[in-house]
Image 1 (cartoon, each protein chain N blue to C red):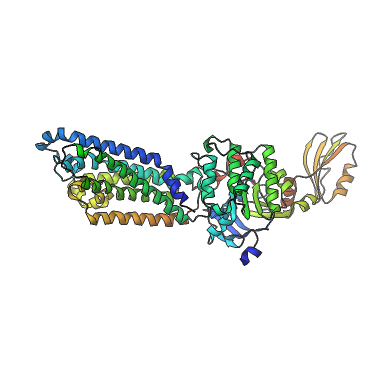
Image 2: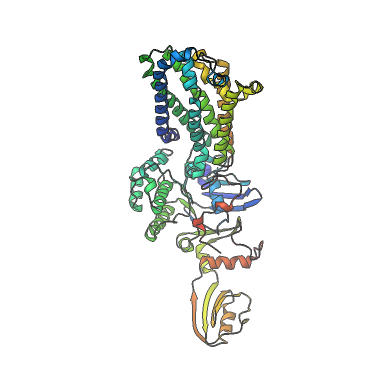
Length: 313
Length: 282
């Protein structure tokens, strides 16, 4: 029980996974705290799903370890899985069962942990009719059923691979509030996504994975507050090509006299440069996480592949 | 935990069990009912060697010889088809369908999963043979045929170990080979080559010495009705079943489970990226 008290909800320790010559995970260290909503972001092929599947012992790490509340996901995998709830990214359900049949099957593995009241409230909240055959479900309904299966036993650690994919915006909202409620009750929620706005809105922290490496782990609040300004300036006339060749300023686009800039740290210099020309309009936007992260890589010079294929699997 | 994987496995094959069983029962009954009209002509029939090799050593004109030739010589092939389809579906099929992801994310050990699935298919096999036996009950008492129901029980039960071996072998192939098609291919190749080796081994002298390589040789379904079970051969078959069941446990324990259709990929993980996730281009 000591481990349950002290251990983080999820811990990756120098996790490495090779598939033949391809390295899918290259020494990932990460801990997820209890009661935390942690977003796991990264381009396709970055290794998010690989890391998640190691938690469930579906695949085995080449080296390193993954732990759930102190239980080793490989050596104590049944104990670890007892504490976990899972929504796979590519959800496949048994087409010959009904929604209720599916719930009954998966419930049978952890019957003592599923309360009827909670289960029924969950079905109502997600507006899911469990009497129909899974084969006849829409993608959204399958996804809802997957969420019910992941959540019904109120796992200490909930792991979701792209939880809101296939759901309409209203249900996405409902799922987001459900996850926030669970985190509020002390459950850890670890989910991967490529929908940045959703991560920004829900998560406490964000881990960013790229080419099998953890390149950033930040509080969402501090990330947003990071000094990055996205500015769109409309000049009266086209300005010289090299006008913004300043340190900390990046010209990300230009259409005629309209210039898009990302300004890190040196806002003053950028504004003084802008002021040299006649300005018709100026807008600044809240930078998205994507923009913050892009700025982040380039600064930290994580330069294994300068400008290389972003989808490097 | 309540054996839910066992029950699910049995539920998944319930219609196959029913139809295979019913089909075999009807076949058996029909063969018994036509026997009296053949008996007269069969007594002085000179049989070609090839046919003799297929139908076994018993006298074709006796009830046991006739059923051996017309039923037990080829019915094992049907059961082996059941064994290979259900055995490869049990592991390789679920992996290819992607349903293992959620099933194995539950607190169930892999060993337990394999054992419950194997047990489910074993019970399914026994049920098929039990239904098939009903065909004898519906025919033998009403026909003038010199075969006892007790002997038929032995001969029908004797179909079980061979089928179980192919169930275990197909599950092993699914656990050890990269994907479902390879597993099905290997199991089917073993079944076909074994069947013909056993058949031709009795016909062609050159193949006689290697007839022992065929698993059908140990089942000896054609002759069991007339001659009873050879316990030595039965022991070999059951040992092979246990061997492949254990090999399945080991292979499945070590396996990295693939995602999505096609299962485990040699060309990892390019194919692993679901098209639905391709939204993020940067």
